[in-house]
Structure formats: structure tokens, C-alpha cells
Image 1 (cartoon, one colour):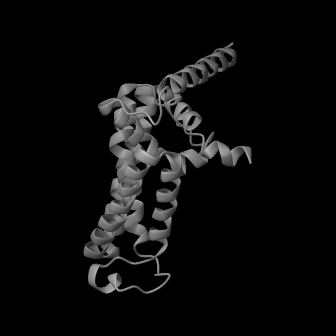
Image 2 (cartoon, one colour):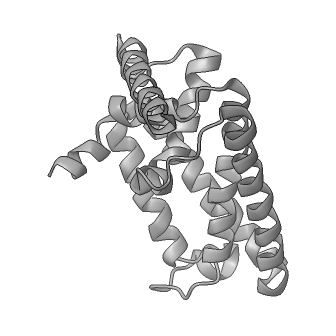
Image 3 (cartoon, helix red, strand yellow):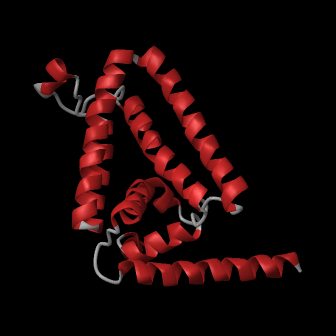
Length: 197
């Protein structure tokens, strides 16, 4: 139950993410390149078989396949995390699914997988550079795989909403996140100093 409830603890999730993304250049890199990764996965998922037939399949190319259920998982999770920003993130996920389906239908599989591969390589390489050159700290994938897989698109959106509009899910959220993030960074620096002795 602890790990599951941790998935829905937005303060801890965001503080953990911010501890690994405190350099502003690295933050911008993630804001720019996380959502294209999500989008291009949906382009590939378009080519999975439909779970059932629907009228939109033939006229619009919207196939109720793994891509749709993948998207709905994110939609439900983000709305549970935070009503306001989560609803915006959910809308973006659905918009990605619709547009990725249309792009995939237009490209066809033989071209789509090449485009997806190129975009994925660019996005992942840029993020690795962001961590290695600017953050000087490795990504948190190994420590929190669930966050890397599920939560990061929402967290970079939350970061953008905070930066541009001062948004916070509730009063005192960012002060609490900052305290947790600073404690996490302090702990990491202390462990790093011990290992170097």
C-alpha cells in the first residue's frame, strides 16, 4: 500500500522529480522533449490491433486499440493527482492520442516507425546531455521507474504552469515541495561526499 499511495502523493512525486531537475537548462530540456516521447509512442501504438470496432475507426482513423487504453490510464491518473492541472494534462493526452492516430494513419507503418525512432533518439539523447552536462546528476529512472514511466509528462506540465503562471494545486504546495527537494538534494550530496572519501 505504501508504494501505491506514494504514486498519488503529488508533493513527494514533484519534490523527487525536482531534486533531479534543479538546473534550469535541464528543466527546459525536459519541458520540450518529454511530451514528444509520449506522442511518438502513441504513433507506434496506433498499429496495434483494435480491441473492438467503432464507427470512428473507418471515417476518422481513431482505433480503440492499446494506444487508447494506454492514454486513458494516463488520463485517469492525472485527474486523480490534481483536478485542475490534471484535467489539462488529461486533455493533452487525449489530444496526443487523436493527433498521433491521424499522423500514423497518414504516414503508414513503414515510414512511421522511422520517424518515431528518429524523434525518440533525439529526445532521449538531449535529455541525457541535459543530465550529464547541466544537471551533473544521472536521471532518476532506476530509483523511481513508475515516476519515469507514468508521472513525468504531468510533472513537466506542472513545472511549466508554476514557472509561467505561478500555479500551485493548493496553498503552500510549492513551499512544501521546495523543503522536500532541498532535503533530497542535501542527502544526495552527503552520500556523494561519503563515496568520494
